[in-house]
Each structure stands twice: as C-alpha cells, then as structure tokens.
Length: 316
Image (tube, rainbow, N blue to C red):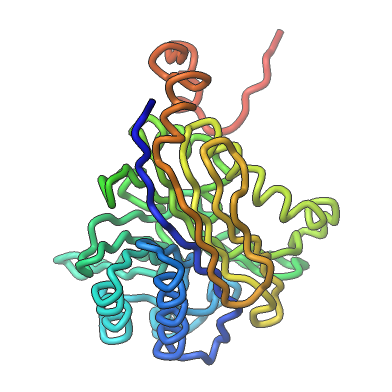
C-alpha cells in the first residue's frame, strides 16, 4: 500500500474588485483569507488570476501610463510585502496571480499575465506566465463586453514548468489555459501532483451565444475535472467572482481530486475559503493504472499536436 502523503490546502475565492479599490485594501482582504485558511489547518492557499486589481483588460486604454498602472514591476513590492510576511508568520505558502511588467537591459517592456508559487519562508520558488491568451487585440463592435488580453499581454515565455513544493510536484496555469488539454498533458508528463490555477471568467458569452452562457459553470468544471482525471492530479482553482464593474464573473472555485471528483466548492460569489485534505498518493493509483503514460502513450501518432495550429480536414 502506498504511503499517504497528505497536504491541507485551500482555495481563496475573491469577490469583485472595484476599479477604484486600492491594492492596499485588496491585500488586506487576501490576508484575511489566508488567516482563515490557516485557521482551517491549511499550509497552502490559491488566490485568483489578476488578484490584486480589477480585471482591467475589459477596457480599451489610450493612456499607456494608466494601462501600466495595473502592472507590478517587482514582486514582492510595497503593497504585497505584507502578504509575503503573513505567509511566513502563518507557515502558509500561496499561489498569486498578477499582471507583471518586465523591462530588459535595453529598456524594452514586456507584459505578462503571471502567477507565482511562494513558500512558507516567503520565497518565490516558481513562476508561470499565461500562454493561452483569450479575447482579441482590438475592441469588438457589438460585443456585450470587451476582452483585450491579446492586446495588453505578451504570450508567456516560460513554458509549463513543474516544481518540487511542499513534498509534492506542483504545476500552474491561468484561466483560459485550463480549457486546453495540451496544458494538462505537458504538466502530467512531469509527474505533476497538484495544479494550482486562478481565473476571471465572465458568465455571459460576449458574442450572444446564450447556450454557452447557460453552460458556463458546467464547462468551467468540466475541463478541470477532465484534466485532473486524465493526469492523476489534484486541481486547486480560485475564481474572482460576482458582478465586477458591471460584468458578472462566475464563481465555482473548487478543489478537485485525481479521480475528477469535486471535493470542495465555494457556494457564494464573495470572498470565501474552502479547504480540503489532499492525499497526493491518490494520484499514483491513476497514473499507475488507467493513465500509465509509459505503457500506453503512442507518441509517433501525435505529431499534428505540435506541427499545426488550426484543423485540417481530410481531402479524400
């Protein structure tokens, strides 16, 4: 029998963050959530995508200074130091999503939708930059709301790394990444045992496809449950939820086991913490039997996954 390797982990859902809400106030909310997670016995907590600010890609900016004000140049910084200090005091690591501005030695700027893993000593031990950027690079006429991630962010340049963390193998992704099976498999091929992710997902389909609006929560959980099961990994998913600046974001923050079962889920669209006991050895059973990659994968037939982007129909 495999030895149990147990972690108590939490997902910290956040309610709306107003455009006018200061980072200081947001970090206060996050510290309160981390303290609640600690009280529930957690050693790790996941915060949402772009947790420090409102979801700013919904607006079209003419002023670069205003746009850049949403980005963090350093991490930690004057606003987030307290969150890192809290992690040390409580012995609770965390995942944080934020907008990152990086400037190279020649003064060229790059903008990323970023997440980090922070350990109980307050040290950043892993970084990921979002690769699957949704939306458009220009506003869409007639859409119910704008989604301009392609305009404001560069495609992530760190790949999908995995990290030894808290006695297990952790991976990260962000929001739209969760919909792409390639993400899960690349992480799975590194033996990932926990995937932490944050998201900001509007309830309404902006192209007016009402059926997809009705299924938004179903699809949110479907892709993560499939990724968990097909790669034998725990999934810790934290949403920014509720009506933020007129846009309704789904909640449904959850903890999913390697069997694909949801073992914990947020009930509100406000700041809320859920905690679960995760036995990392549960994933071993999945990876050694049904999804034993070494025994069953046939990579010579998978070339089209990396050799093309769009679908090519047969010509026979």
